[in-house]
Image (cartoon, rainbow, N blue to C red; front, side, top):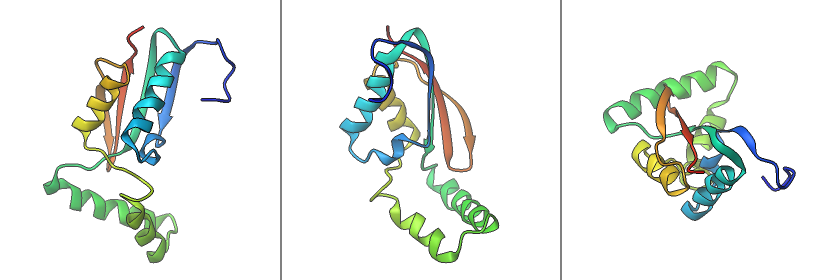
Length: 128
């Protein structure tokens, strides 16, 4: 965000698999708030992050996720290191918390429009 030219408003912004690395809630809200400040009125945000699913689905989806990682060449050690990073380097917010965070950041009506395994996506328009 800090590398974008100042005073320029954008029609749209994407944040794909980014905010999950902001481990403090205030950082995450600030990140999305700053995006909202850089959008034109009715500008569109599309965001997606890894998000835990209901417990009865999470283990099954996580198993498929791990198998997919193995298929693309990840070693068992790499898969386990990725899982160990959750909660330390990556914060996974349930969908309702993610939606509340987006609202707090100035996107009053986020729409959950996609899920692919553990990745959930929303689109939203800012309040400007």
